[in-house]
Image (cartoon, rainbow, N blue to C red):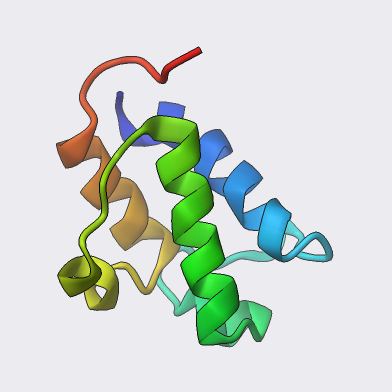
Length: 86
């Protein structure tokens, strides 16, 4: 999957932990946690939701690399080149 295909899936996972978030207002290059004022547990739940949606394992060591929407999309595009599971 490419970043364009991954974006709605990632935003859906984000809405699970931050339902009040407006995806159109998210700056893809700024920290998601700062923009949405989510704590570490919400961020962890967000990554778990991504894992559940895509089946991609995200090691804890990679969490610091996933601070922005753009970084998450790039990371997932490298990890998950095929279509999302149904």
